[in-house]
Image (tube, rainbow, N blue to C red; front, side, top):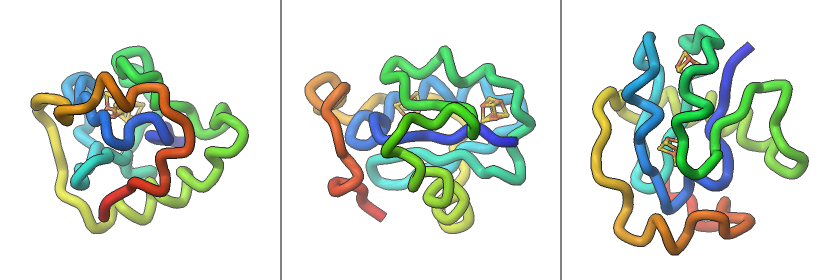
Length: 107
Ligand code: SF4
Ligand code: F3S
């Protein structure tokens, strides 16, 4: 099993999650992070760290966010690894909690 990053990370990208991952399996795009499913060891440490509540176990993905399972796998292959926390995106607080942010995903 793996954990995945879901919809509410987009345009927020708080990056608290990367600090706790023991296997450094987060990958960074312009306005979203993903987890590499083949590297995640299912430790669950990252899930409570995300201020946006955007991280889910593979078998607990909310309805409507199923597409993020494949998206995490796909983008983790092309984006760069991130292991240190950085500043969130400038409008993170404003975007936190807005629904259906997939349309804003930058690749
Ligand atoms: Fe990393 Fe553990 Fe989160 Fe997987 S569940 S991404 S191994 S912190
Ligand atoms: Fe995104 Fe949450 Fe990590 S907003 S960058 S999954 S801390």
